[in-house]
Image (cartoon, each protein chain N blue to C red):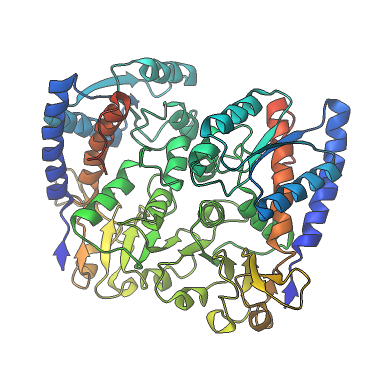
Length: 299
Length: 299
């Protein structure tokens, strides 16, 4: 079994972006990403802080606009519009999950498609369907594909089984693996909470992507030896041995599955860091698209 | 084996739309769809004529703008823009395939998303990903789902295997069967030209959707008894017995497969007529969305 270190791969990407952004700065200004966060959900606070720190490391500027959790839709949308119209901002990210009184889809669609670095808006999802390279691919699926590329994993004709059908991971990942390019050209199965006999599908996977949000759900009984596993789950389980009282685990029961997998991502340190790195890559792409700077080096 | 007659189902839809359009006319004007056709490709001529005839039967007005095959991108786009801005036009359809010097994706995206009754534009594909009911679903996948509904075929937890990954059929069909609603909630596998051992997947299908464009490719050896087959293929094969010198067959070898299938669509008379009916349904939907008329009755 070989561990796929998202931590190391994301560091490579960050180093590459540092060089790229330094060059962009000599030609004009630094790229800039704007974050909007609602309320004080600890996971959201932690994600946005992490993203701001990585941006700063790379030399990407960032802004953060905070609102209370009961902010009105009108106030939120006015802020999105202001960022949409601000020429100095390249990317906009509204940190999900949003409070229940605000529609996530409507919010994602409010962000200008040229600044939708999270890739959740309708235009960019549609461009992904169309295999249009000018669109933004949401960061977790983009991170998965980047891992696959950098690990030289063959997808052509392979059976990719995705567990989870979310807009954030499952659906865009399926569309990516189906693309008529490498990585892509895979046969793709999407399973989810309504799937009967999940193991019957996961056992067929050459590459298994788990995005259920269910701790340790995929066991050794559910995978064939030699499978490559990309575990997107980040689940907290109680652990009295930890200072925080919990620890993070994936959707895959790492202990039983890792010995029979050919490659596997750990949790934490797998897909998570890749997601943040791809957000930065999307921000630089947005800057380049706006400035009409050569896009040849972009994925 | 039971035959699913797209011919009969589409007639039902056309009758329903006649009543609906008659009612709309009493409240204002008739819905109107504009067609653009480039060149004289016989299949395109036949499709557009068929669509215009069905529109006329329902009471939907239509316009047809013809261009030579070597029309410039600028002239075509100026016409699309003119239709986009024409308040009396509800739906616009540019008949594919387009000549090679004009990008289909760019053309589809040029049509205003509110008038994109073919559903091939990025915004509507994205809305399909988002499960936004205000979007337009492309007519063939919408026709398949309508068949499934009207035939009371259960999809929840079933394995739907789609052969073909096109933007027109394969991808939107996959997204539809994955939706968190009925019909939907299926486990979905998408196969295509790069799939190894196609039969290993088609044999697993509870519902098999074939959209390969390969005559009689799916044989009885490739399906399990009791499968439901929706055959999207429309292929011409030489037949000296026919006056035209050819006849139409699907992607499924009807003769060998029909006896073991539980339900199957014929070619012709299966998915084809449903596609035309759904275009009309989309046109009425576009009219209602624009007029902000009650959408409760829409699928």
